[in-house]
Length: 195
Ligand SMILES: [Zn+2]
Image 1: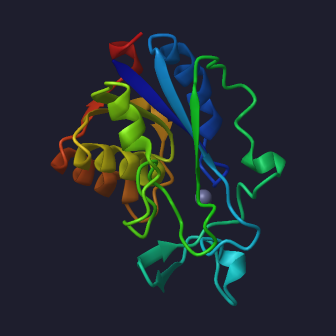
Image 2 (image 1 turned 60 degrees about the vertical axis):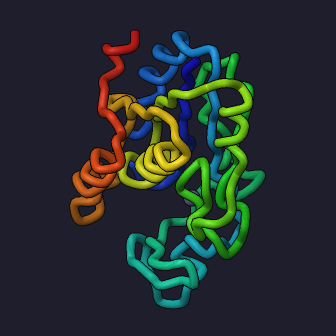
């Protein structure tokens, strides 16, 4: 009835690897687990290095709106794109790859950043009679928040497991993400509430 989404992101998340033990522990309580995997083209539009004179964490305007620029990360077929080796969730049945369209980033596991290219995850969950989503991973203020809010838009009950996430926090973006998630009806819990 429930599931976890866990995220792989090599983007500069402080102490990001600390969430792995927590995610492994609570995953034992879930029958259905979906992972996401950033899977970027080598010169992806979200990379600062793709844009002359731009530095990581600067913002640019793209056809679909504002885009934060990141250090190069999770390039298709490289070690940086592989699922963290210490993640131990053998029952995870689906990996959603994100960010493989060169000109569109994708934080959310449900909809790419253009807000019109769907990954199919909502249908996958609904077909399996899943109505509640637990979100974990990196980063709280980007992939986790966008996934959690899109899950609410798709009609799911949504929990974010706070201590199973870490944020990047650009100019207060973690606090803002929690404001947005709370407004969307996302509930904050701790891993000790689960296992
Ligand atoms: Zn990315």
